[in-house]
Length: 329
Image (cartoon, rainbow, N blue to C red; front, side):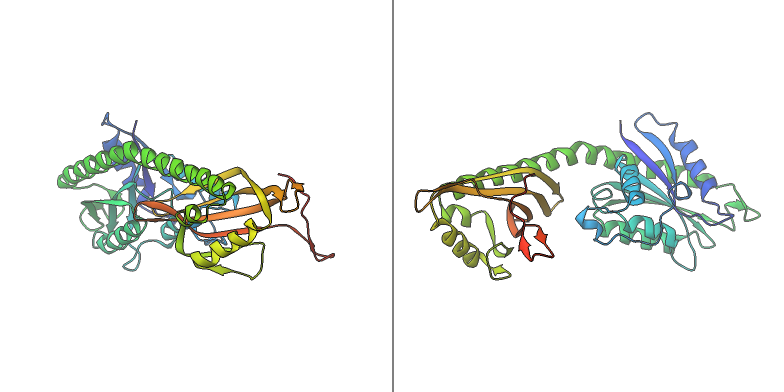
């Protein structure tokens, strides 16, 4: 069943977000088309963003980030409850959103804001942020005024018209979340399968010494960090010249990859694993080759996944100044 998180976007002492979230949940649980759960940022303390890589990379270093990512990934859509502080959304909510990327992307989100002016400025900024993350922000907005919807500006007593707006907001969030839940895994699985087939074609082309076959697998502006000098090979022609040089060493070529891990977004993907090039040398000697570390970065260009960057390396014996080439995965 579709799962929706009601996210409390403030951790401030004396906050009113918990009241608002309970009101949303009490209305939401009457529905039978989704499961709702309150997520409180107080239960997920995150320091100021401390991940060394952008969230788009999806390579989270810290345990608190991985725990937060696992929490958010469980849901198909969100209702974000936000106050307005100084005409903006709370920093703790912005920080929590900035930690992740793929876990937000493609999911529906609705906003319930509150403040002196209803929190509309915070909701507007939050909508812009979520849309940058490729979330599907629904149009209905519940805007609660501290003057008219909170008794003595302390206890939530929303006007009846807010109930109708909230029901409409939930209708939209649930419907779009269900659509995304049905569509996203299929597309992701298709993209992962396409990238896996890409490596089959790479293997076939290398073993056939097929330079034109390889040309079709790379972006024209590929930047390659290969074992062989120089430091980088820029452009498809440079990449193919490097392969042509490799092929002159062999009568027959073998190539294998293993332990590949794919991370796929809408237009960018990357794979890391290990590769080994071997075969029969020009003098008839057979070599099994050496295992190297390999990273491949893909871009979706005209609906086709192409390698736009690759990097191959071996560990370095720092004191000896030589590469370590006898390791096995």
